[in-house]
Length: 326
Ligand SMILES: Cc1cc2nc3c(=O)[nH]c(=O)nc-3n(C[C@H](O)[C@H](O)[C@H](O)COP(=O)(O)O)c2cc1C
Image 1 (spheres, protein in one colour):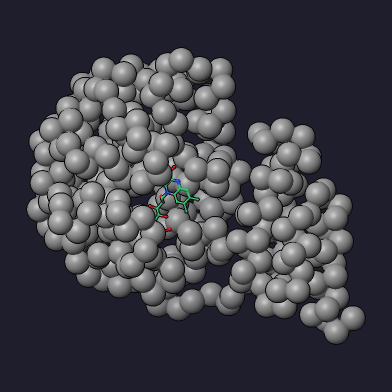
Image 2: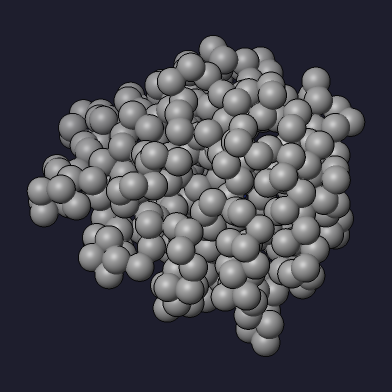
């Protein structure tokens, strides 16, 4: 895990968002490390043909991790082996933070924080299976709820079983996305272990990245929602870290160009089906991008219903004309 030698910027794993195309956009804009959205161990073992598209790694998409969730040590180890043999990721990440009922209800994701010995057993089984073939990392939250903060214990246990890095989202499962991320807890956990800890939660500006680099506790930061609105955040943070200066904000024209190219590339890839299916999937992404585009508010209802690429191009032209006073 050579990239951990310097303070690294991670694109967070995000279901329905961090597909190969978005990963490549963020990488082009300065993300050092990316990660696929999660796949379930059972999906890998029972329906590989359907599941494998979620862990597709194009040439050049490195370093990249594949994220796996599940609740049984043996099944997780078997699924990890299938993934590593098929796509050779740079690391295999165990999800112990996902709060959604579909995952928690199957005793995966954040529910593992309620059973730390089981989480350690899962990590140990995966580490043993992959041995020198692929490093294993784990992404956790701080605990199940405020009364059961277990991240310090979890970090120690995971280090003991051979996990190579831990990403901590500084919220409990019960918080979901409410409140704010507890960076004091993240930094405290980082001070307890020798393996790198990557901090996650509420990094919304390049100055948040600078703060954590200067405080020196974490080995890197992981950025999720802010990258959906503004993938330039990686480039902006890098510039601030290396030169002390921020680059110019992307212009509206540049932002629109990126949206169009993202949508076009996704249609061409066919990963979400035909153009109509792709547009339905991409609407939320287009709306997320448009949040940072001044003057786009009146177009949001139309963007929320956009049906084809040509219509999106027309809406983009209307927006640009309105900004130019046309
Ligand atoms: C749409 C969406 C999908 C997500 N999917 C995953 C996932 O597949 N695996 C995971 O570990 N976390 C997932 N997360 C959580 C993020 O990785 C991250 O921990 C969280 O958004 C906090 O970081 P942020 O404040 O930078 O957004 C998801 C978050 C969002 C918003």
